[in-house]
Length: 256
Length: 256
Image (cartoon, helix red, strand yellow):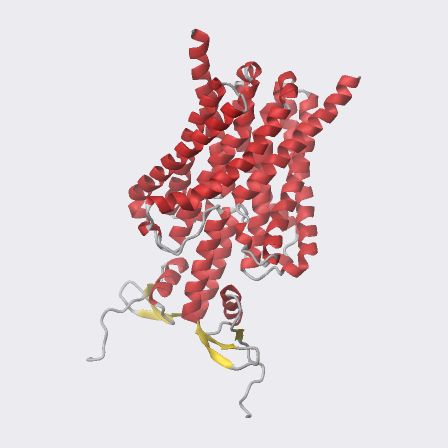
């Protein structure tokens, strides 16, 4: 009784394997007892099993982040049909979402007809939004995977990430405005592009932060927030922001 | 001497920690001797250290794939300045690369002026290319991280991925062609969009496969093939493919 340590760190039988591996990584244990609700020992998990778990979870996260349905099967034994199936579903889903972006551009065709220079910065704007959003989601997904971020603190995380988004958005907005002035896009297009850049980066940062947190709350894998998924959402909202700001300015200019 | 096993699996002192953890994961070892060039034992690595290594490598890969410079420091203690610095460098680099995409569109302004419907599918095309490329790189990066893919077999991997690209590209090309006909984009734009979709998906798949393999060959971390990086390359080449095919068809039509 004298050598007994009452504070036993253990894993519950219903714990997720990712949580168990985080506990073992934190305490450098070689084995962990697994208990039930009444603290009865049901067995142990040893660290060599955990190595496999962590490695396969990491591979799964990387694949999900790239919008690939993960499989347990190793790369070389997958058939062509399986290779295509793992990817095609996501691509078609994202394709149909992107049809919305085509509709947005189509809707503003008459304005593009009048100011072709508006099209110059479309891909730059939406891609930068996608990049900023992918960064946020990579930070949140990896923070959750490492057990550094707890979903309960979501409002603090969102606040921090949005400040980062505002700082980055301001800098990139000024950069795009200067570039647009330099290539003689006209002050109207330059202002529209600069302001849109700011708003798009801030919005994409929020989306990239919130979606993995919401997925975790819902009990889903936050790595489902793939970069392609974030990019598609920020493409559509980016176009809406850009063309609506252009229309607003356009109305003011035409009204003069 | 009778109980001796001559085939000792060991790690070399100069081995990368990722390689060591792959060996331990494969054999379910609790410890591994570390030897020098003459097979003299210098020490051992235990599995609990490896758990930390695998976890931090996984976090690093996830961050790199999202174009975030990884840090050892946990999420909550990072200052605002560090948060911005980890991301801004990548975003500005990608911004300057995207200026090329703006120049491509600017260069084709007179054709866009004549056929505004060409702009409708620009974001859909380049984003689908980026998605297909991100998928390939996610598969290759995770395959390399799990030790399932060896860079020596690169030609076989490239061959397999390009077949997948051709199958997926054909299906998505037909889908976009049908969609363009449906929304009355005109047969000229529909054909241009469909053929471009095929070529863009095949090209992006190749890029997404080759870059992580090349990075590994160069001794760099293949996870540097971030989705934003792939997306930017496939944006620029995608626009070049699309508008050049449009110009080709346009020349034929105008010539009639």
